[in-house]
Length: 355
Image (cartoon, rainbow, N blue to C red):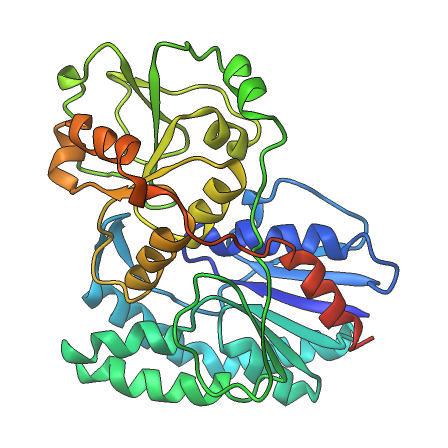
């Protein structure tokens, strides 16, 4: 089987989870080739004889000024530009799939590859915890353009042969065939003790990892002088982050840093939630702008994680004392439900049916 696998470039959550799926699939004999199509390919940092890569954008997502704010006007402009290229893209990618004898298209989580599959005459599989029609529909209150676009791409999703729905999911379109699968995400290679030893963490210090992914904290100055000696902020790969008062270690596998820290402070996103779940690291979460997935991720935090809310002003002023007392003392912060965690195996078993 030759698979055309598209991964959205919006944030790091899509590439981190689907990268795991691709690594798992490459171990299977029934996989001849995987053609990975994305703008986030360097994030994976691995090669394989059966893996072919193509740097290409097949969805827009939303434009963000930083991890905590959405730029609707720029999003609209980028979507309008993308719409102008779709006819040409459809022709080129249809030819690419036929030339390379692709037999299945998998998408996380754009609707456009589903249209390519229809044009080629092959099945398509959606993987994700949300669809872009759901995200854009929320912005119809600001601009009718997003409502019309949402209706259009909802139709595109409906032509998927099958949908594999990840945990932390939002309402989805009427897929022809839909299955809930287990969690997929990057796991630490080290135990918590091994990870803390690796990074040289002290037993008498509370380490809080600032995880603000692809879009960072541009324009935000944290008042680290307010931190007591017992609390150390940690960051790695956060665009715009300051170095004053923040520990920035060398990292070869980010989930090990997640495991080493006592808490992760973040805006909720699928990727970091999955990594915290596997690392058993509690979460201090804040707002992330007007993004419809947020409320569903907060519901997941309530059900499956030790977690507590902290507003952005307290993060900026480095006032963590109250939220740490809360999360360490309230019984309600104990996770209530365990998650099914073998999502990669679920994907393998479903894709095997198309062989």
